[in-house]
Amino acid sequence: MPVIIADRKGAIHLVFGRNDTVFYASSVDKGKSFSRPVPVAHLPKLVLGATRGPQIAVTDKTVLITAMNQTGNVMAYSMTRASRKWSPAIRINDQPDIAKEGFHAIAGSDGGPFYAVWLDLRGDNHNKIVGARSTDGGRTWTPNQVIYQSPDQTVCECCRVSVAAKGNHVYVMFRNSVNGSRDLYLAGSKDGGKKFLPAQKLGTGTWKLKACPMDGGGIALTEDGQPITVWRRESSLYQCRPGESEQLLGQGKNVAIAAVADHWATTWQKDGIIFIQPVNQKPIEVGKGQTPSIAFAGSVVVCTWESEKQVKVASIAL
Image (cartoon, rainbow, N blue to C red):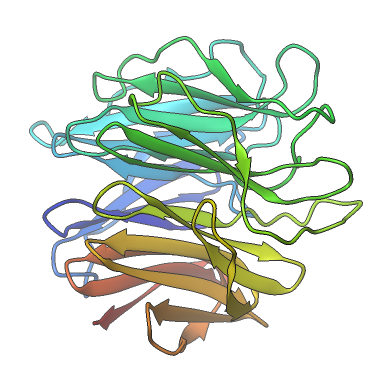
């Protein structure tokens, strides 16, 4: 699964994994072309597939990539813009072999720390949401903090977790498991992830399900740091802001979102087809594949996805 992120200047940064190697590439022409992928690291038993692959975040000074191995460790690799060299691996989880499911996410913003979150088994061997922050570009990480633990012992075990940050605003979204329902919850912080407010359920409906849907949705922040979330319930996709009713987007799965200024756009897959939908526009079919990721390069929406083990890219000017 390829993942992209855009920096403040509109450059696109892309990460993907193949076999046991993590690769990085970038674009300075709004996704029309990318640099030749370079190997960042060799990580034995690299976790890939079902949105479990390497993740990427950027600030004005640093590009940060994280990846997980099958033994349950979250590894960080950082590159300063000045050096263009990748650091050795740094383990983020302060208890070894504790993140067995392989789902994690990272975020960063200019003027704020990097923040990492993942599904973690520490303490009672049940999955909970755990995070850590870095204020030095990913070279060191704070002691891990439990952000959320379900009253029914475990959160949803096989759904991706999402995180978004802007300045000191940090939001973490995950699929919970409470009273037989598998709904999305959001936890927020206004101090750069030092402390989180209690997690709140998103939307007014619920999904009663005795299984994991393996679909975690996505989150983006507006210019003033307010979250917009997208996620799936049954076969439907929704957009939702905290405290408001959900709005139907359409049918599909693996929905993702990106925002810049007052614009946002979503992408998802349905029946093996990738769609992009800028706000207030109709969905646009861009190709065949799965697990799309999306970013804004100025006023251009750039989307990447996996198709027959190849990385595909499409861009749409607003």
